[in-house]
Image (cartoon, rainbow, N blue to C red; front, side, top):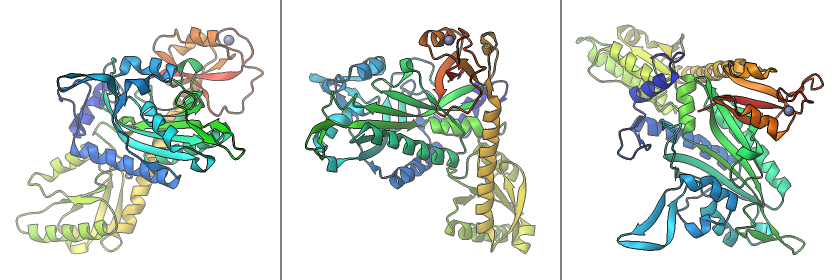
Length: 468
Ligand code: ZN
């Protein structure tokens, strides 16, 4: 398996070997989360919950079923999702009076309730989120974490008195994204999606994409709804001036694709490489003993484990009766950031060598073990992020000739006049997808740039790439 030459096969293989999910479940496109994969996912959820809590969001949990009558209220939204919806039309032997659908996302579940909850300006801003499973009938080929029909999903929904306040929320969401992605060691770009590709029902959509295996992977999106949903769903408040107004809304979505990004970006020929922040086991201790010293070695391991666990490091001892070499191999596949071997030498010195999954080592004594391990975990996190960032920066290339786009690997930035027809011309380039214009356009010499299609004056870059 070679990440460079056959990313797809490599990705499937290391996911399977690390035992993250089992795809043999009898409903196609849905996977079983195995304990190790689920622990990783829960650790990501914990990071998200912390950040949302720090930013004044409350967690809620809405029902999975949505009545068709509520789903049908926002026309663009229905149109965007209708092909992907799973329907529930029967209960027991009876046909339902109103058909129900499994949520593909929760706008249409939440907003009828928001209209009951919000009465006055004192009820705003409303900021909530939930982490639940959503259901979308994907017709493209499914792949663990990246394209599945039942998805572990995060969604935040906010309501504000004004459009400007909703705009401020979007800036906060981008700050939150920055913090979460840094902890997961994932670099990304932010684009304003083209109007014809925005979220169904949104005023505009920010797409957040990372890059792996020669393609971009969308890992998050943030949407400005303005009053597009509050009008059909009648979400109104009485303002200070006594007038009834519609709220402005935003949403922010992420999903188990974050696990896919971690697998795809950091993994190597040996298997997973997990960022310490989400590794279920940060330190694995491997005892290396003979018949004679087994008890002494195990005692040493137990003491070391007790010390570092007490200091909040997630650690374990591999006590299985298999050869140490097989254990090394096993924990490398699982991406554990640090391995410590304990044998006769370590028993007598109470000093150990820390082996980093990212390469290299450090020395540590029993008494100072926790503080040094924490520092090394931070170093590993820095290394993972910097390497990924460097790789991503290197593949973002400006291309000013239309014919050269199709042969370019990576993310291309194409000078563009701003006209939709020129963009649609570019969409004909096989395999390439338009991601939109950069959310923040660098300061550049725009005078000397011309649209690659019509040669008229440059307005923005269009970001294009192959995509998952
Ligand atoms: Zn043009």
